Length: 212
Figure (tube, rainbow, N blue to C red):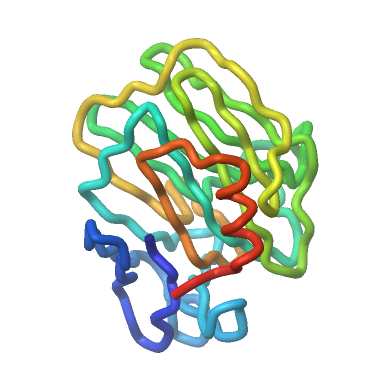
């Protein structure tokens, strides 16, 4: 659980869960010489430039029941025809579990994509609605075996069964804002769970708001 509320000259994002897997910034400090910007829902949020900065942590080991939640703010949907990764877990054997934002030139601009690599192909589900711009939005994904459900502001949006299950072998690295560099925009209160959150639990995270 990384609130991203350090601010100032900090180059490490503290993991406030019992795992204590702190994340390290890399790339350009794009907000007045800092990796953080003031004025989010929390006092600070992570500032991502869309070019070369992200956060990484090692040691997270996802399971077949898994969930992601984070808050994001963009002034506009990033350009391009693919997607920008907000959060990913990548293993040394090719496994990948991710939450991404569809770019403006894609078939569903501004919709989030939740997915994984099953050992032979990427499998994903697309949210049915686009996120709003200009304010923080809570986005989430839940994974339960071969079922993937995207969430927007605490409400399930689309989702369903896909082919296979996530490849869960190897050593894992968590990346926030990469590896294909989300931005420009801000992220805060990033959480991952080795459990499939219920809809009511995602709704509670949204109602409660970002925590630090």
